[in-house]
Length: 127
Image (cartoon, rainbow, N blue to C red; front, side):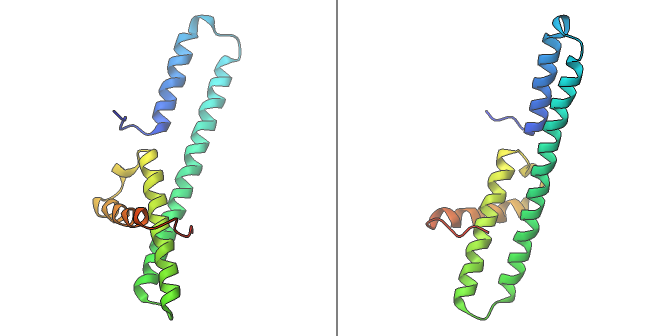
């Protein structure tokens, strides 16, 4: 069964467990190593969240352009393909990092709808 906690919290729990088990055997400066590891994990999570934010902005922009309509059918198909690929990537990242519960249900359903379309198509064009 998957945990509902983000990977970040699981990694913190692991570090805390390790540090508690080493408490009686810790060496001088070990606390700095633990904090350095925690900082690195936090920085990776922030980077991931910023990338996810950029993907969501890109997805909304693609949707707006798609709904406005373009000059040719080919451009519309390419944009739709990019939009589907972006939604699938957002969904995958959000599921892997347990972020879906943070988003409005309508947005999650929309991502799932587009991700299902991407599963039916052979390798879509990536954004």
